[in-house]
Length: 284
Image 1: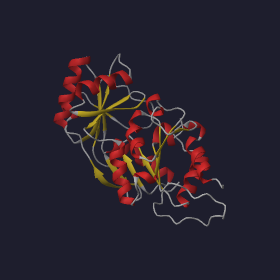
Image 2: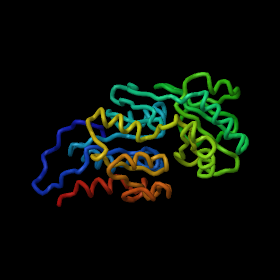
Image 3: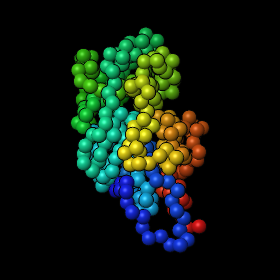
Image 4: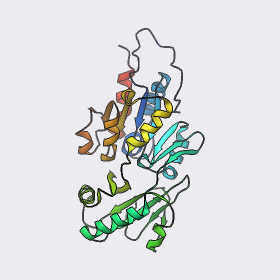
């Protein structure tokens, strides 16, 4: 599954179908990764065939680089990745951050104050900027089980002591969709708000989305939106689908994403990415 943005096409049979896209953009959690955080051999093979046919593969994830790098390394992925909901363009092969957008901490603090005035106290976490930026987790914030590292904090001042990519919010009674909706109404003029997964509602710099980072990465590769197919599963993938020529939602995707998708494939656990790519690569 090594990403080769400029890989030469393999020798094709006279009846082979030309792969119609120059860029394959895949979300990570719930899309490329199965429920056990692995990538199936079938999906690896399908992506390898797409890159052999001349396409680039870019991972586009809400995870910041420190929570993404180990997965890319394990996959032998050496191309570009878009991390942190579009805030970071990362060169996996060189372990180098090419671009990074940070959250205005004064605006973020104001947004949290206004939102808490509407809904009451929130549980808060935050992702610090940089290749080795820590994720800070405050009192009451429910962290998903797994190997991803984080640092607990007690003093609210610690949250704002270094540049941040984003802030995570949770509410004791509001579900994710309700919290995201209220937050957009209350503070949408100050920050962007996205729902990126179960228990994951995020505050981002205004105007930032996966489409922002993907467009920057695509420009570096000389690829256009009209040459891109994108795969995803959550509402934070909606801007990426709007940017790409063709958006494919997984069977396990959120209803909001399915509503704007051009196509719905099998689930992440049933190799949904491979199903689509194999069809596109199949001989006539």
